[in-house]
Every structure is written in structure tokens, then in C-alpha cells.
Image 1 (cartoon, one colour):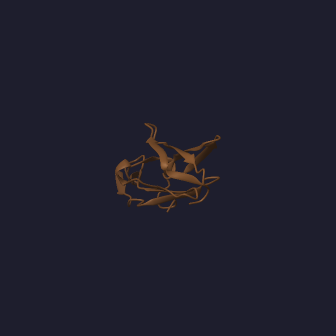
Image 2 (image 1 turned 135 degrees about the vertical axis):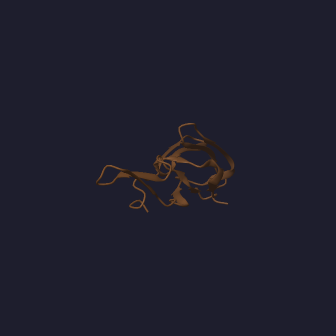
Image 3 (image 1 turned 60 degrees about the vertical axis):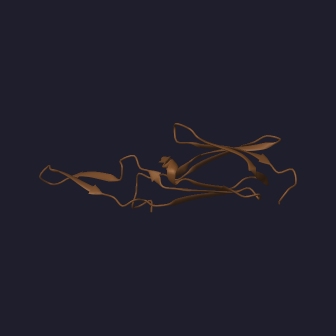
Length: 119
């Protein structure tokens, strides 16, 4: 997939914790994500699954030049649905999560730790 779409970068995940919650920030696929296609799931065991279709920086078009100097546009296929999957350090309460997509494309989530352990 990455070979077909060199403009896509791997997802970057940053996880922090305090006594009552985890915060994590994800830059999905190194690019902005189409908000309308975002699927986001947190399970009680701390497993996080994010799926979406990235918005590529060049709108899925590649510009090349022929030997005589003419511009040639090649339409690239959509990278399709991409998944980011990771596990938080401990169990959480998925009902107590606040999700925000920042203007810079970073997905930011705060989720409370589970007081009861795994449910």
C-alpha cells in the first residue's frame, strides 16, 4: 500500500497517562483524515481501533513530465480504508471518552481508566 501511495506516512501515536485517565493523540496515516469516513472504537481492555480514508496532500493526482516537456497527470487509485490499531496500557471505560479532531488533523482522545478492571 505504501509503495502505491508514497505520499502516505505511517500513523503517529502518542500516549500519556495520569492517575485517572489516558490521553492519546494520533496523526492518522501522516495526513489529514476525512472526518465523514472516520470509524473509532475503544474497547474496555484498552484496545483502540481507528479506521478512515486519508486525504492525500496531492488529491490523489501525480504530475509527471514527458520527454518533450508536456505535463502528464496520472490519477492514483484511492488508498482506501486504512486501520490504526493499538492498545492502551490498561483497561478503560469507553463510555467516558472525549474525542476531538484538531484543525491540524490530529485526533485527540481523553478516556477515563476503568476502576473495575476489565469488564
